[in-house]
Image (cartoon, rainbow, N blue to C red):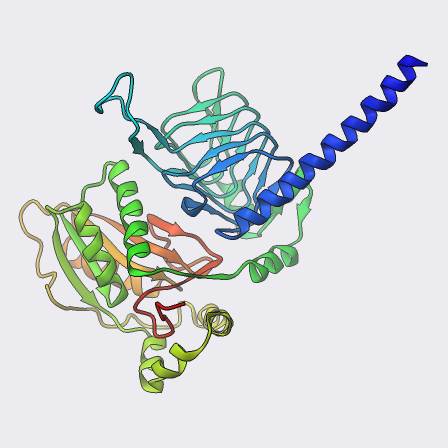
Length: 394
């Protein structure tokens, strides 16, 4: 009788614990959704630095995760992660004023790409960068870069082999992604997720500067120190000037190529009207405009000739001695046409330079060019402090 009672009690406690875990996981999903796309959580875990966390679509994370995202953590679309993942993006400063360390931290962002599979009990340390399509075996410790498509094992402490690039590209192009448990995710379901997760994020001048510096430090962490920083007018000019704070020895140059959307807005002169709208309504207008522009970009892709790119002030000019690394900066990449034209323009002047691209936001899927460094992936639209519908007092 006692054993039967204990069995019933144990079952009750087990069910109550499962219900409690599910409730905590749901709460954490809703909390994460305030800052980025909410992943599918198998159970509760621990997460800090939500404002520095960026998660893509169709991301699944197992229970008992531990995410210190304070230094910047980005997880790409269709990434599946098993239980007991540990990610650190910062570490104690052992060179500070106290022993063994003081109360300051070194921050180094972690990037996990698209279509990545991470096994049970993986530990990811500050500064790690896991490329698209990589597979990380159970129990592995990742302390540095893992190239795209690499299968990384715990036993060897390094790459085992590489996925077939042709097979990977074929499935990715067909949007053949899996949901939880490996079941096929219909393309229509993936498109529905995209539509439902579009959000608008408003950034003040201070908040934007903090995000720009965070991304600029990611560039530095990848051992890329630009000799020239090229801002694309007008939003990219604001961003480039903040980037220069992280790279003060670089030369700043501004180029311009006006987009059609900017021309239309200038003609409408709707600043006063937009500034009176509450953000809830202007958010909807932004999302509607974005979908219209994205549909138009898909229909006209590759049909437009290159538009003129010109120097602004300070001018780019010709390549000078010792200028071997160029960082092209914009606030957002939509179809990618602007960035692609500027890259071509810069390459004509700097034919032998290492040219990389940088943007705060990526607004459209499958752009002509994807930035080498980007803070927010597809699914987030940003209202910058210079936007026509921005108003600080809210």
